[in-house]
Amino acid sequence: MTGVKQPNEKHLMLFTGRAHPELAQEVADLLGVELVPTRSLSYANSEIYVRFEESVRGCDAFVMQSHAAPVNEWLMEQLIMVDALKRASAKRITVVSPFYPYARQDKKHAGREPISARLIADMYKVAGADRLMSVDLHAAQIQGFFDGPVDHLWSLPALADYVEDKYDASEMTIVSPDAGRVRLADMWTDRLGAPLAIIHKRRDPNVANTVAVHEVVGEVEGRVCLLVDDMIDTAGTICQAADALVARGAKKVIAATTHAVLSGPAVERLRDSAFEEVIVTNTLPIPEERRFEGLTVLSIAPLVSRAISAVFSDGSVTSLFNGAP
Image (cartoon, rainbow, N blue to C red):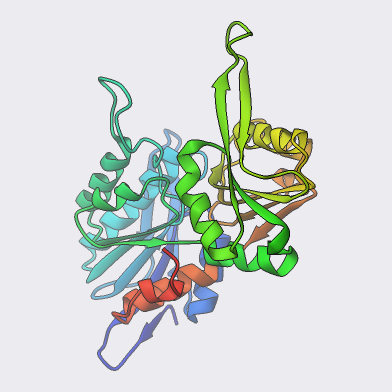
């Protein structure tokens, strides 16, 4: 059986692209459904073909895709899946993108630049999506880009539960790696009851060219410092922040982040860094060759499955977070 039928005849069906089927399978297992059999392939010229191998008429469809590299390929596959569902008479289509593509391009920093995150939302809508679901959007205003309901899920409760179980919060300082992540760090301080520190990068007036000085604002000496961010991409900023904390007497430095993009030199940098532990979730696939000692991967599947269940049953997604923002 690939779906769940209830007395009101609503029918949940879960679909996955090829980027991260392991996460989709976890979600399916928790929901007690099977992934809908799908034929997906890429032609020699890189065009993508998708066909669902059973009827989807009248279903409540949830289309999962994690946007790891190559982002454009997996985005196009998900759009084609949504279009196929619309043309096959699915009743409602929810796009589930644990890591929202192009989220960092959420505003114009200079003239003649795109707002790509808005373009992605428009593409989902035109393809046929009725609803979006994502985890820890890089910028909250992305919720307003989509013309329809957006379920913005937060990984903070799951990450914080792990941190609380393993570390003593009374010895901890929450650290924002730059000014742009202060709001996120502030939410962590509210959750753990720990003080806040901020790392401020500035140019060294005594050194020419591009040398930066990392100023730490807050008490970190002798403390367990938890650096928090929504993603780790090339890991340059967060590793420099860890070095700055150690230089100022931090007893231990750990990191907690939702999206492990881990581009380019990220794994090497993190492996050689001052971090005792790097805690991430599996919103993106992390193959074995990209894993390293000290990396902890928590599953986001329980959160996503609960949110899907709440949407399917017309329940409250907000109530899942027990007071989290």
